[in-house]
Image (cartoon, rainbow, N blue to C red; front, side, top):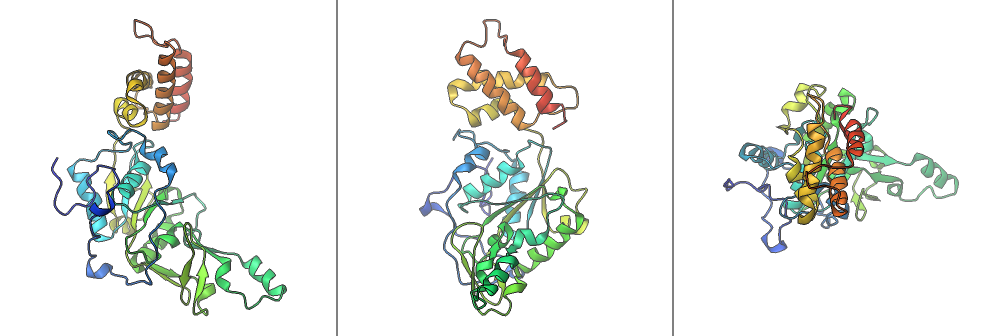
Amino acid sequence: MEAESWWMYRGEAQPPASEERAPWPSPPPWRRFGGGPVRPAPPDEDPGAARYLGVGEAAPAGPDLDADGLAVVNAAVLLRRPLLVTGPHGAGKTSLAHRIGRELGLGRVLRWWISSRTTLREGLFSYDAVARISAGAAGQADADPGRFVRLGPLGTALLPYERPRMLLIEGLDRSDVALADELQGVFEDGGFCVPELRSTPSARVAADDGPGAEVAEGRVQCLQFPVVVITAEDEESLSPAFVERCMPLRLPGPPEPERLAASWLPPEMVEPAWRTALRVVEGMEPGRVPSAGALQDAMWLGAVRAQGGGWNSEGEYPGQAALDALWRRGGGRGE
């Protein structure tokens, strides 16, 4: 598949050499925000990203998109729109965000995990009012109020970086329906206010990662709109108005066991691993799909047993009871 000339993300999931990193494309006039001053580059990729990207350089974990899928991702980047990624559990939604962040050289992924009780403010910032009151009682009423504020993952992503931050919002469909609409307002503005700092000319606040940030009169404003990946199992629980402002991308089920094994294991362990994972798939009840986690666990069982002679000459696996327990646990819930 030949990449289009306007694509920044080509699905290779490999970090660019610093001298090869393409300049960030200009935004449409209606998506320019002009925040400043420019902050230092974000921290490098989290070492824990390997849990989502795998260890096989030839076959990185996560979905391999076709030309249509790559076009959607690149359109989201170019237009500064959130990428709404839907699909069943184990389809690779989280891995895709890490693949995009790695290939585009955006540093550490900021991750906001959504629950049924998550509020917009939690993603933007927290304010320790109790500590502020205690400081006043101790005669420190003139202390910098910024020290009681900490930006959350969304708030940090909206700081003015020269190259955008990568923000992963996981499981938006678990939230109250109002959260998506509130998010849309922040995405349109490219920033937000911290009410507790409005009367402060300049305050230094803590960020979700890296050094703190200077905030003038409580306003946080991005320079480059972040690359936002929002995951959900489906769009049905999100408001149509919010979905319309996103670039939608639907992923199929988990990857084939052989490719999954190649993403995570040394070459000599791949064959027994994927053969074992395939037995999990074959043992599922019709209509049930094993999660990527169940397949990974099965692969590891097969690889470890194979090292000790776990497979016999007829290709049978003596640990069948363990696999039976695994696929009931991993797929019995319809994951």
